[in-house]
Length: 314
Image (cartoon, rainbow, N blue to C red; front, top):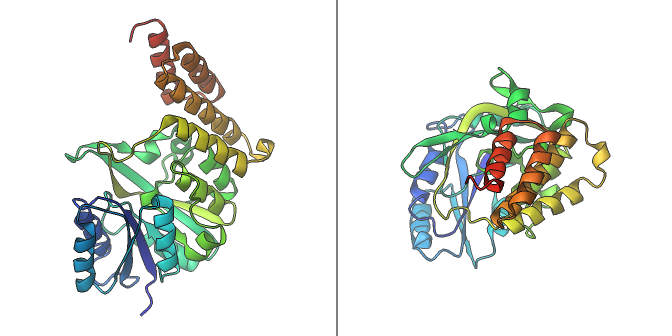
């Protein structure tokens, strides 16, 4: 029996979180799932914490679990290996320390199986602390996407502006995404040049090839834990600008207001780096320019913070 959905999990030294991640997939829609068993492809990217033994023991009990083990090559290479090994025509992604909420994939699976033009479908995500405290939801964080959703609920078609919307605000949480395998392969999967922003780059590539939908349902619990996302701000800024240049060689073709919002995000990234380097005046100027270009509460708060630092109030 060929699965209709495969979920790819890249992991490295996440043994404490793997049991819950696997259980959340297996419990997706009860037993049996309305779209059949879910294949799970775990790619162990050189773990040294005993993950290999745990996963192999799990695979002996679960015929729908495939485990790949290789030398450390990074999350992009791990996900690409999972895509290649997956047998289903539709692929989901889940980070090893995240969890699906019950029954949240079925609606998007039904959409993608009914409409072959849909290449990508994502959903909302809630960030949580290791203690279980909820920190907020993705769709409410991004002001312009929140405005676009308005009071609507359920499955929403991003329409012809999907590429521009994803460019303007990184609304696609990787652990919520399901995508068509043929489309993933056609655009080359995750770009292994990037350690940061590789997922955003892929969603842009997919959005340029087909239709994109979102579900306002909160599908995933995203764990915010110390050390789980070690970010190099300088590398982040370089990646964001490189991806922008490659995916948008002619910014004038991006419709307003999305072009303005995207350009403001570039300035916000620059301000992050200036802030880290304690270049207070520079950070304030960059963040203020970002606010003036695309006014929103997040940018105003950050500009006020930078002003306080310039005035030595913080």
